[in-house]
Length: 372
Ligand SMILES: Cc1cc2nc3c(=O)[nH]c(=O)nc-3n(C[C@H](O)[C@H](O)[C@H](O)COP(=O)(O)OP(=O)(O)OC[C@H]3O[C@@H](n4cnc5c(N)ncnc54)[C@H](O)[C@@H]3O)c2cc1C
Image 1 (tube, rainbow, N blue to C red):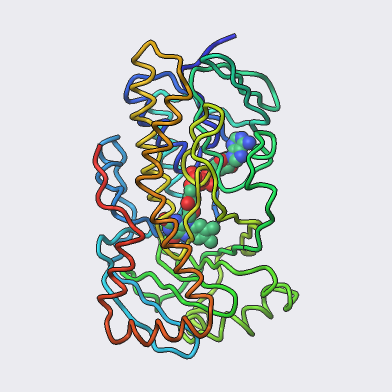
Image 2 (image 1 turned 90 degrees about the horizontal axis):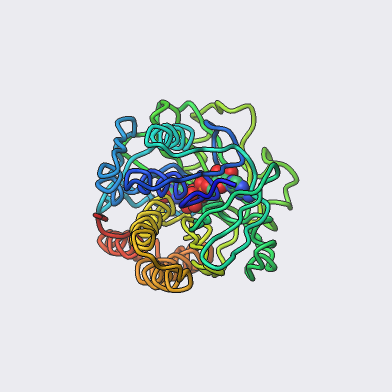
């Protein structure tokens, strides 16, 4: 049986980034992804600028993205507050971004397999990764399979036993009125969402909502009319736009619970390690950043004669916590405030008087430019 140096389970942003980085460092990488590329994914599609210099260092240029430097924010009944985003970012579709990274991974020598991983077993200094088709062996496994999967249950991860009330919906729209340089963050009863332009010329509108708020209306049309349109900015956006997709994409059971970035010698990256609330607009950057941390430590591990996977996991977990734990906590507190009508109105009034405060909050949920 062929033994790889690294197997990466899941080829979203985290998995593809780690695969490219490790392949460039000379490692033999197998990436297993269950869906073929390209495809649309539920995501706000605003990529924070902090990871762009790092992506360049691994040869990923993003010529396609739309430059975004302004956040527009409002609660129902409140006037929108606009502020400049401290680092700025780009609007780029996951359809385009994941496909570009996939191409780069293939060009860098990563072997990409379209298959589904169903189990991972750790032996002394090596792993066996089982897909629907066969078993592969390797020295290191990176778990990059996203928010919540049946694999979490197989691996005995605790967070999976807790149900999550969150549902997300996304579609692309034609909308001439939406300004290129702006990302929206607008709340409504039980949720929030925001439009932003993509390189495809369409505007992505993605929202997150509690399932109990959604289910009272029975269908998306009613929910949009009765709840989302309570926010004037969203009402105007929807009135002036036309959906490009046949129907919106949806995902349920989005879990923001605490996870472990390491599991029995496996290193978890991206959403598999922990998920920041989407209102922070930082999940993609965190996925890429965590991949860069893991790639650096895995390279050191493979260059040594060590087989001490527990020590590798401890090092990675401690760096992951140092970089992301505080951001996750602030994101969670922000979501609580914004989804409480009284607290959200009070914060809107405070921030309208001092938009600087909003910039300080944004800084607290984002990293600095990452370099490697
Ligand atoms: C509503 C919403 C809006 C968001 N908006 C933004 C935003 O505007 N900006 C931002 O920065 N972040 C945003 N995020 C967060 C962002 O989408 C995620 O943080 C990011 O996608 C994480 O990337 P990932 O690689 O960890 O996971 P993913 O991109 O989900 O990739 C995981 C991959 O693993 C594959 N996979 C799963 N199971 C298996 C298996 N068993 N075998 C093989 N492959 C498998 C999946 O098919 C998938 O391709 C948003 C999230 C939500 C829910």
